[in-house]
Length: 332
Image (cartoon, rainbow, N blue to C red; front, side):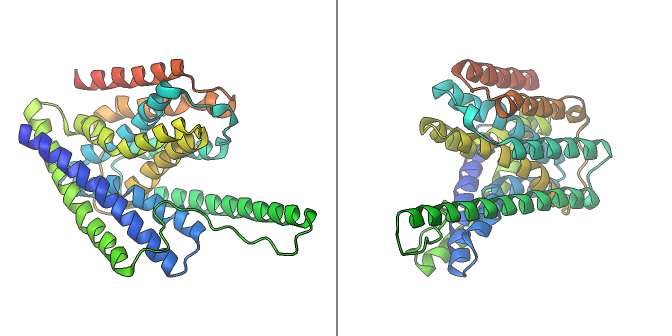
């Protein structure tokens, strides 16, 4: 089993590095082709950062191991709330009373409810996938309209401020900063990042899924449990790193927005696309327990989103404690 653990770790590292490489290459290629930064940030960056989870889901369905696919998504969503927000809250607290994430949070709850309803409708097929992707399209369109409106208001405010100061130059639209964007990046480097990402993602997914299945067989637990724990925690590491840095920089909106956005994409995009590879029957134990834990963890965010509660260190202890209890229940 030691070899399988090493292969799983190697596969995870390859996935994370390849996902980052693909995002960097795709972002710079898109901007080089003249695609607006707003479109790039809402589509390419969002999909690219979810590429590891997507490749794991596709590989798991092809290998007839849907428990890993579902476990990765459901486990990641649970870990995102309890662990990814709990750890930074434990470290420095999150000042969430000034965050306005109500609209996106409602979308997350709606996506969760839709996913659970479809799970009870039977094995997920491409028809269910179309419904999930339709929901994703609505969320993306709403985000695009909101972002464009926000940018227009910002430009108008800058123009008014310039006019009040008597400046003759018109206010110029500020370029949106996108993670991974580098105007000086050479064309051959863009190609290299794309190739490394496209090669590394399926390679990492293959290593991780195969080794996860082997580990499950050796220790006598289901593939679903491995997906809910080992795979889910591993693929949540980028979100954890992002939220910890956001907490240290006192950017609670970034931390909360990152988790909410990731959860929406996991349910609507990853499962939606994976259904086109093959039918996905949900393991019965997940219907009885895990999807309800995911829903309950999502509802735990309600007072922080709607009532203006701050996520203090005490809440960090509660959230991380609840996550470790959940993992212990799964393993024992």
